[in-house]
Image (cartoon, rainbow over all chains, first blue to last red; front, side):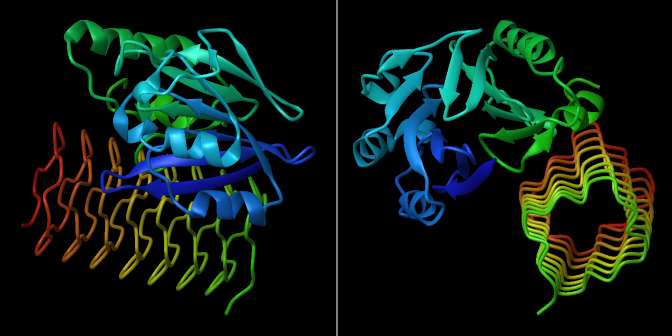
Length: 187
Length: 159
């Protein structure tokens, strides 16, 4: 796999570019801020960025969506029709597949931080948006949403193999095993 | 300049006492590796995976560990003096008596970590999350910044 990590804007949102090593097709996960490092990484890595995946509709994750979509000419995929007011090309939900080159990914429900929230899973790699962080979870607006988020993480992420790497919306990456065994919100 | 291991997969290997001084280990995978007594002084470990590794007594002085993943590793008696540990994953890390003096722990994630007896004198802990961490008898003298210590064990801490 080819992975580019970009820490963007003052509240430290992460964006990731994940590429198929065989076909060089790639996906951008979240677009919080337009940054020249994004197209530079695509160019330097010889990638073709064909897809943009939005984990959830919060401004810090979608603000640069129009510019990124225009620049790359990519298909935009999200759990909602108009994240940040931008009309996406494809709306997906729990269980749907997303193909990037020869890599097949799966969308799972990790709502709670937002009413619609998705994580994207490729073999060995998870993009969890603001649902699961290293040692923490995303903020929620009600106790019901908090319980929903923890339940979704338990059912849809913690059932993955422990060595799966998890790339999160804010802060350092982690693994399923670390979080399942040590995250203080679960253990 | 040291050797380059950028992006290399060294998971589970026995590298006890190996000298990585000044090496480039950016995005390298050393999960579950045996690295007691290894020397990482001045190395670049940006976004390196060291989770579940045995790092007892390792030397990280002056190393760059930004975005590194040390969750569930054992860094007891390791030396991190002067290291950059901004945004470092320390979830569930065991670090008995580790030397973290003068370390930059900005936005790091030591939740549920066990740093009893560790020396954090002069460390920057701004926005670090020590939720449920064990810091019994740790030295926090001269630390700067506001950190989250929710449900942490601060018994015997020196401030």
